[in-house]
Amino acid sequence: MTMKGGQAKTTLAINFASRIARASRDVLLIDSDIQANITTTFQRDHFCNLANIVLGKVRNFEFIQLAQHLSFLPSGGEAMVEFSSYLSHTNFKDTLFKNLLSTINHNIIVIDTAPSWNEVSRNILMYVDYVIVPVVTDYLGYSGCDQIMSYIDEFKQSKLGQCKAEVLGIAVTRSHPRTKLARTITAGLQERWSDLLFKSMVEESVSIQEAPAFQQNIFDYKNGRTRGARMYDQLCREIMRRIVRQRKNV
Ligand SMILES: Nc1ncnc2c1ncn2[C@@H]1O[C@H](COP(=O)(O)OP(=O)(O)OP(=O)(O)O)[C@@H](O)[C@H]1O
Ligand SMILES: [Mg+2]
Image 1: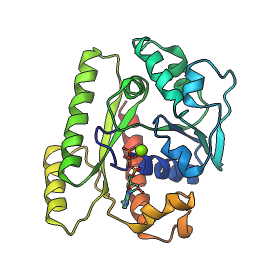
Image 2: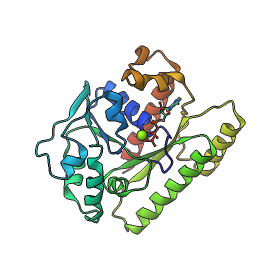
Image 3: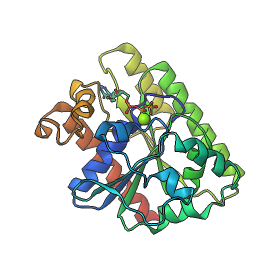
Image 4: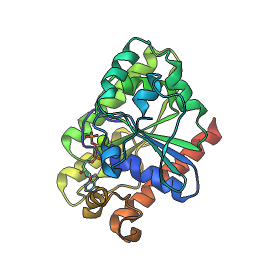
């Protein structure tokens, strides 16, 4: 989840979901962004999409199978406008959305969000366990991270304990570590959110940018023999370890 666009939310969502599926866990990847970037990446669209399910236009859920263990639910593109307007009247009490997220028979659900603090993202926050905040190491990336962290905090306080989502961590998803700016921003992130910042950081990489053009996740692209795949593998493993640790502490 981010305020600022282009922080690699979609890239992280696709690759994290794909990495878990490769570990033989059943994953459902949901696109909740009107931009529908995951839908575009894999060139898959379907009437059974997030918007139509929650608007009650679809009775039986039918997910798109992207790979073994990896199912996908598209956002619905423009139908997301109606969806968002519907949610604005439900006052976080919509049961279809809650049911969709809680009754699905998958080990884990990964949701890609739009770059904004909108009705859809706030509703999602009400029903998920964890949020990951990706950040690009430039000034606007840092300030967007700061903003979303405060918004989540304030939202949770306003919900008086009803919103159980925890920020699992902050992930550096695109960095030029040789630049002074990136080093300064990384040091700032480490100082401010030392417990939350994932140690595995993803650097700028051509393979990460190329993979979607071939409709592939980074682990399939070039058979996973890229620096991008190694960096994402490390980050995804660290995210999984943290989820396991958090679950043990519950
Ligand atoms: N480490 C990286 N190196 C190079 N390019 C990257 C890297 N991570 C992401 N990108 C590219 O940056 C662009 C933005 O990434 P992405 O679409 O994942 O961001 P986003 O946060 O989902 O954007 P939006 O806010 O618009 O939804 C994409 O073209 C993606 O391929
Ligand atoms: Mg995106």
